[in-house]
Length: 158
Image 1 (cartoon, rainbow, N blue to C red):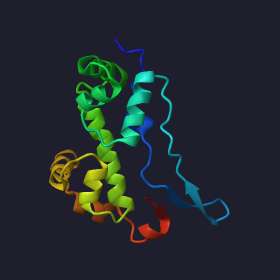
Image 2 (image 1 turned 60 degrees about the vertical axis):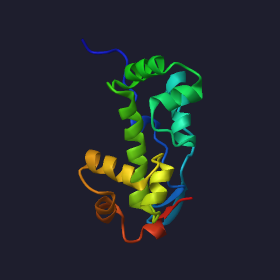
Image 3 (image 1 turned 45 degrees about the vertical axis):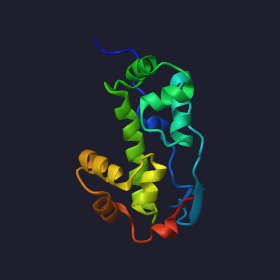
């Protein structure tokens, strides 16, 4: 039986790490588009709280989120399973952090160590290990394949 609850995806709550991007307008002029840095509302108080923590912390595990929110880890994990449809709630959090890492790699010249720190990994090696496992390529190779030569001219970041 199909669930009546539409799963919340990482893309639905993701807030880009770049602060602005240069976009071509209909009249071929260029305009800086500022990124909305507010977490999108999902209609779920639980997921909205998770979104805020993903945006403003570098937490990586449901246990850390539960502690921060003052709730039971098991209850929070169960709620995340229902809300996202993902069997292991830490996988949802990791997917969000990987999306951040990929954007940092493609749009900035931050070092792998700084990207790891910003994405909640204690060590750059930990990010590289998880990145290779999930993306089937190294962060360096991902950057080479996805970062435009003029990235400094078309993206702004902090």
